[in-house]
Length: 402
Image 1 (tube, rainbow, N blue to C red):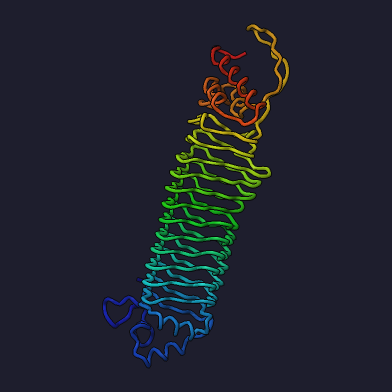
Image 2 (cartoon, rainbow, N blue to C red; image 1 turned 60 degrees about the vertical axis):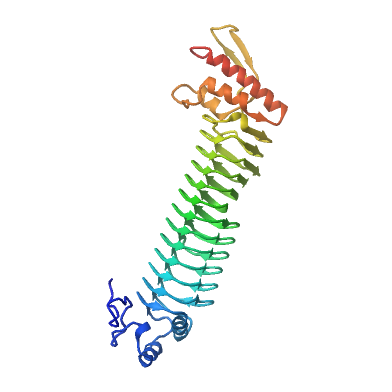
């Protein structure tokens, strides 16, 4: 520890108040009154390593006029309910490795600087509902054993929750993430509600043990994440990265003027991807999904090579790219062929550019299986895919292509 500890006992880690040599928790009543009287709004508040009950915390905040300055609570232990509604911290606040044995509520509080709760432990409920933070907030490696509420909170310079644990219900509904939020490697033990959130959000390698409801604006990433229950994603004007995601329950992805990438995803339950406006799906390469419905999407650039279960994919009201029309001359019969335009997968265009550009999984025989297995809802696209399947089988039977 980088502070002088309390002289009350060898086991007390509280920072010593000069000249008494004891922490606030162990000061005699008269000395405590003197120490509290010395506090002023905007001044440093130092309770590092101190055991703080609810009464002491209330007296400290009152003595600081409800406006403490720089506040240091590293390794402090809060044994009573902590309620700080409407309190304004005018400087940076550090609660690294702090312990909260009971309720910790910062409902409606305001932080003018940065807030660090790295490694903090919350045994009961934790509320950041309606909090405004002008700086950055860190909850890296924090443990929230019960429900954690962040709804309507405003984070001015980002939120970091990397490798944190939310064992209870977690809610971020309506939060504003200026600077984005990072939940890399975080575990959510119960339902996560991340609805109507504004800003970027990253859940790469996160584990959703319960249902997860996600939203964002700008960019949402859950690459290599694992969801044991339902995964519901709703975004607008957003790029979505779900590469390598593994979902055991149902998956719903609703896009509005957005773009999504599902390459390598494993969707064990029924999955639905819908689009409104200019919404595109860029990749279904190596996706494992026995029951996948696509609707209202631009699939003109979507790669399908390596799709495990093409017969389980249903396509409705989607846009595909078109092949060029014209005449092709070949040394094989028929020597002259007239090609009309038809709908085609992006993988076919890549294959026709030559072996240097082709995907190893986008060979003619693999493309034939894709065309034969996919199930478009309209007759025109179905006919085009049937024709493409025949063409791919023909190409697969030749050593070189005409």
